Length: 190
Image 1 (tube, helix red, strand yellow):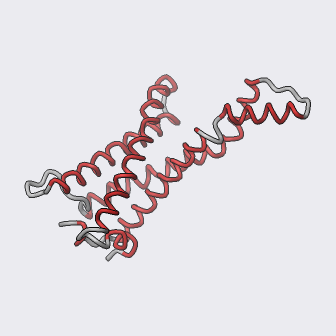
Image 2: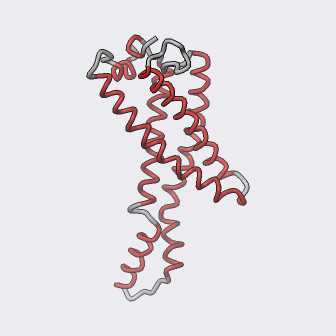
Image 3: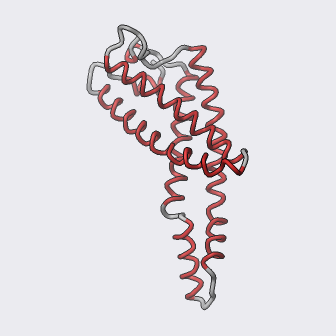
């Protein structure tokens, strides 16, 4: 069944939008951590402003304070990660019982476009699972594996960005072709 003929259940639509919002929020926290709230930037701001008040603060102490300033935001990254793990599990259960809503790339009659769509989703869910597992074990696992897991987890931002770009491009192409209305169906169900 092609996507343009598919009706999306309320459960599917809610999971889709909650997962989308959770991923965007996680990406926002990463973006903030790498830019405005980057620990060295915040430490430098602290040192400069305290220096203007004739107060001296070492770089190491400024870094410690900077980490505490951004800690609540990073706590929300972790909470949202747990929330996303729950959504992911629910999505997998929903896909199992309701059927897969993206094209099956293994089907003999699938066209190239459908194979690409199907593989894109399979790869996305696989990499998302890896990202969620590594994030969970960074927080809850053995400290000896933390650096290794962080390396894998940090790379996860790239698949998410690439998937979002491909997803939006696919939606635009669909809306300007014979598959109009997919966005409306993801909002209204029909």
